[in-house]
Image (cartoon, rainbow, N blue to C red; front, side, top):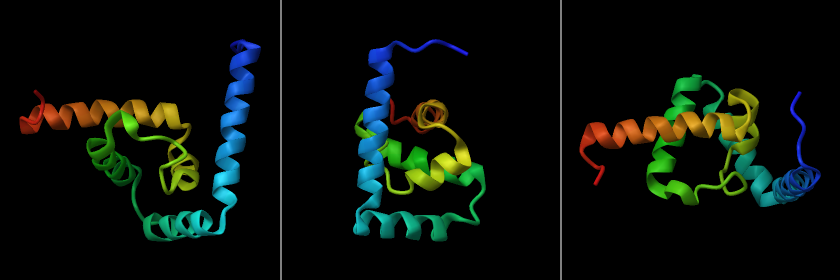
Length: 102
């Protein structure tokens, strides 16, 4: 088990608390529930492709707290940083394959 700097631990806890507060708002809770209902039959690959498409639109501005469905996505795919690494790699490959990369 790796040791985390106490300041980093506090920052992560604060970030998680802010996300929890955001997810408790009635409108966001409704969106999260709708996302889960709409994507419950998707495979993990389909969920990753959805994220790749979102990443191609928003790029580095795509944030955990602003991603509708984050609760379900993390439940299915694991931690945000882990699956976003895969999403970024796939988005880069997609850009290069379609000639979108500068």
